[in-house]
Image (tube, rainbow, N blue to C red; front, side, top):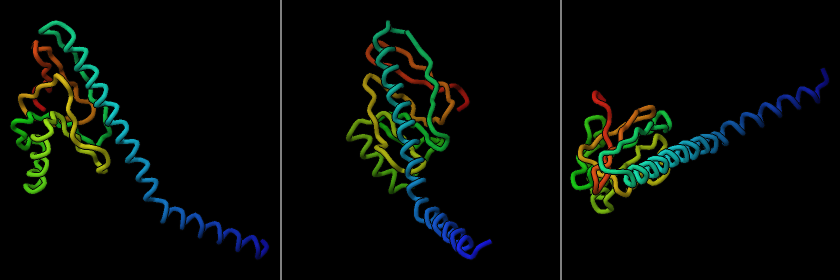
Length: 158
C-alpha cells in the first residue's frame, strides 16, 4: 500500500469523526423537528375530529387514536383548574408558570415534548375537559358531543 493512500484513509477518518462530533447536534435537532411535526399533525387531526363530532347530533361519539412520538405526551386540561395530573407533576416553580399560561390563554391541551421544541399550549375549539389527564402514543380516546361542547375521555385504568 502506498504512503499517500494511508494518509488519505487517515484524513478520511479524521473528517468523518469531525462531522460526527460537530454535526451530531444538527442530527438530533432534525429528529426533534420531525417529532414536533408529527405531534402537531396529531393535534390538528384531533382538532378536526372535535369539529366533526361537534357538527353531529348531541350524544354522538367517535374514537381517536393518539399517534405521537414515544416520549411525547398530550395532556388535556381544564383551564379553570389546571392542577397537576397523577401521571405528570412538574416541579412547583415550573408548574406555577405553566398553570398561569394555561389559565390566561385558556389552553385545554398541553404538549410535553421530549426535546422541548414547539409551542406546548394549545386551545381546541369546542373541547371541554372535566378531569385533567395525560396520554401517550397508542392510547384510544373517545370524543362525545354534549350539545354545547365536546368532551374527551380516556379509557378506564389509564
